[in-house]
Length: 89
Image 1 (cartoon, helix red, strand yellow):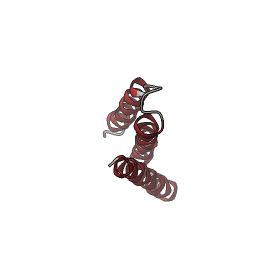
Image 2 (cartoon, helix red, strand yellow):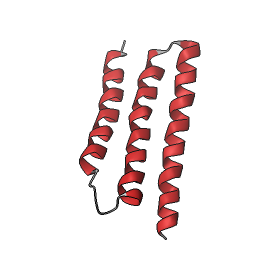
Image 3 (cartoon, helix red, strand yellow):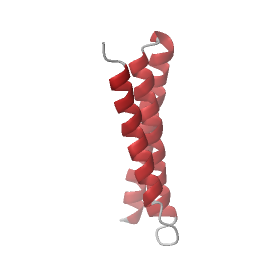
């Protein structure tokens, strides 16, 4: 069961990283700033998923990374919210 959980955490990290890469490539070709803010959001979401894997699978008892995970989640939402506010016409 623990291996299955670790696999799900890594798949979530891979999906977030893929979204980040695809959004960054789309931004590079179109220069649409909302794509940039979305890509930056997924940078923090991918980091959050990586920290989740490390926190719950690598160091399940020794280190508590929950505050750092919460900080990256708030940063992801904050970046996207800032981008939505700044890009309104």
